[in-house]
Image (cartoon, rainbow, N blue to C red; front, side, top):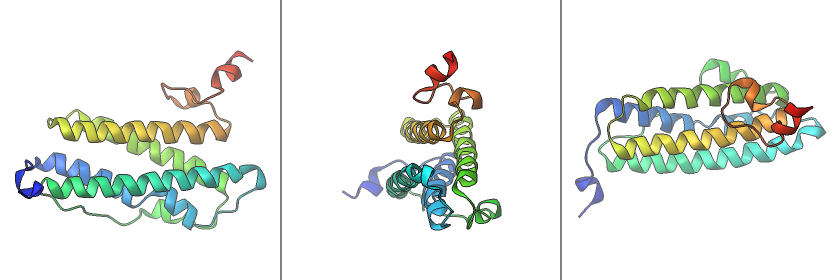
Length: 167
């Protein structure tokens, strides 16, 4: 039997939350930052690899979300890139990284707020998985930016923050 026929349909607000998450991953800010061809100082070459890794993880997450949405009676939908992001073209990578960290943090906080209204365990699991992925991405990017994660309100610290705090 077709899996879409047996999977329960989601509540409208759950489907909307998953569609927002799908859009965030499908319209990957890391991919957009790479496509914007930022100026990359030699000392920041590490960032391109991190952006590629995040963009690839976003692609896989978008694929997973789209399949999951379809299996539960929905249609994955996208929205345009916001103008504040479209202005990233040809900027220096250090500016883009700080903006990317802020945007990813805002997405993570939105997913956390949405969890309060989600009843379906599988949807809660999906959003929880995305939150953990964003936690990892934010911590990694902050660890390279020179700004300790704790200074920006993260519960988890970036690698090396303990040593910086002791000095």
